[in-house]
Length: 454
Image 1 (cartoon, one colour):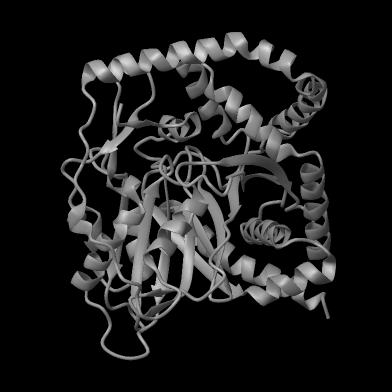
Image 2: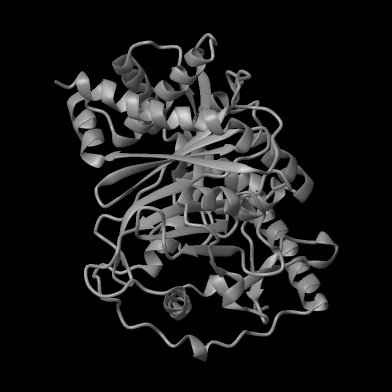
């Protein structure tokens, strides 16, 4: 068959999507004017992006549903691919308003699941791009890599490929889809039946089972206990979205990390905890601990598409008034998770879940995305380590957009570009003021930690 089937984890992001909870990841980026010459026009940029698509064949593929739901959908070439449906000219000149509008609507399911919206003339100068791709296509790191794929390490673009040479492959028919799905099910049953033989051939794997079981038990306990308390960040939500942004020099986070012997990720998590604490206090609420879902990449270097992430569930010490104690408590908790290899245990658990029958997997996916297990997601996404340019325009800021599952009103993402730590606080529109307050609170929390480094 010419199609590639969705992995179970990728399919899970389709399972938990709803009209009010579109599951796309993205970013909003600001580029400066070129050092010389006129800035690129929209048509120039669209042609440039079209020529780069030979580097990313999945971006010309759509999902094809298997008849009778016998298996997960497959990726097939889009015979009606039209770049104008994916690279769009933005209305208006405000990057924030553009991000809010773009992220408030689901992607069309009958075409490749990505879009780039380009604003040629931002308020204050420069070029703006808002990109999004469905979570079943890429994880947060993959979304950043989509941006990097379009950019160059030098102001003058590399030679582009010949996009006109692409022709779609033939999509499988109904009978082929059904036969292939049945074949996958038979193969899966055989693998389950012969798994004990694999253990007998490799006794060391049997000896590893107690340790794996203990790791899975620890991971399960941290996932479910204690349950997430209700907060103003959770509840029913409409589809309308808002993106609040803030940025700091990355060196500020590095100074804090080195002074207190933590990690950049610890600083991001504790700053998020401090920001939420400030929000609760401003509303007259008693600060209390919240629970964060923390995605962790387990992607191997050769893995390019789809999701290779595990999830840790971490208590955020929002009730702690001292900024340094919040940081150290966060660091200690994350260190314990790392030493116990809970990310690897989570990856194993997700792999087992992926082999479960469809109804069981869908129910488990919705449970993991429930506000009973976490109040918000906080994700630290590695960014480019060198300057990057879009047709001569240097990337100055790039704010990540982490999706909101049902019942979750706020997520926090951080990535780095041009020596800046860029925070994107993605929120349902009714919590726009809270998201803006969290953005200010992150700034304040980092300032408070820096002051303690003196």
